[in-house]
Length: 292
Image (cartoon, rainbow, N blue to C red):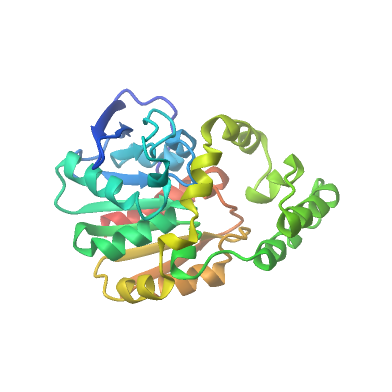
């Protein structure tokens, strides 16, 4: 059993200079082999890695390296804001690998960082040993979540005490971009105290300007990405949440199918942050995959 703990005496902080001299920060935590860490890319996009916590207790068995993307958390704001683009950040991941002295690495990416991980895998397939994509939104491979898919998942939450008020706001969000805090419960499998506390910290962890640049459609060619992923030799696990709309489980299975050695698991009852919904289920599946 993997037990989650917020106190980790083995935690440390570090930084490195990326290709353009921008100083990027990371936190390392966990009891695992420091020579074989799990590098964890945060989503958002452009949300500080703090929100990943200990990923449901993975730190009990695995050394995690949690980098803050440029312009978030402890990382510096770059001189060229164009480097927030998802394709430009591939070089940040590669610079981190070199800094850590890893010939090959285990890589985990959550949510929008799935796009960055896919581009990294396409560009540096020989540098990945195992790849974990957690509730990934994969628009760089032409598999971005659609409003229809998100609304389909939301309708499955009928019966929740907050649904009647929240669903019309969720419809407006995907129709015209009108944000309301009423929609937040749809992103969590369980809208409990832990989910509320997690959601309340988002605003201070998020770089909105960087997120807009990250999504630039000129940054990638989905057909080329899909072709490159078909030549990737790494073992790949795509973990979807049963209640998540980005991606829906069927889309997650399609993404896993782009890799020669890809597989998909669906976490029962989970939303977009599955390590909060059932930490033991989540961490056990990830650790079993990484251990082979």
